[in-house]
Image 1 (tube, helix red, strand yellow):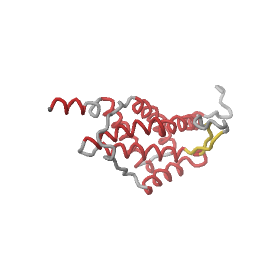
Image 2: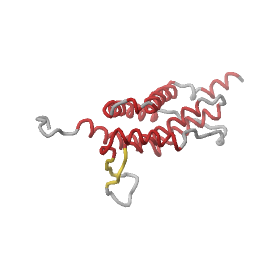
Image 3: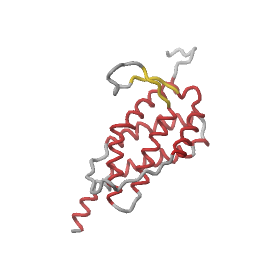
Image 4: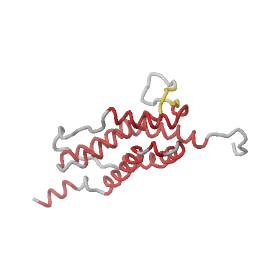
Length: 181
């Protein structure tokens, strides 16, 4: 009986899940103190952590869920707006970028995006994942991993990729007198 329970918990205690928790936690803790950092410190952090989140989320195992209703959302609208406002203030005019939305098949016109909005959305998904995973009952933990994997596939994976391009451009944009461009 105990051996079956341990095998069932294996995906939840796997290295892949623990690494995702670690990276998501670093991301959330940093953003919660983002007002203490400069624009460049924030962008350099995001440049490095976003690809790590993408990789770790892509490696999350599929988890069988016992109870679909064992789920909760923790991030409030005020918390989301707090992250959004800080990142928006720090990125200023460079917050807005344009990209082609591959999900929109009807046209290939550029769509307006926002670094702050994408980062706040990613924060919400990852903070909810972290908080739900801390629940002592396994059904909640199962849902946290399953939901995180699903949100990566359908939502925050796209936001990471699109935001990464915008951040790369800001960090490495051509300077007028730069002989290397």
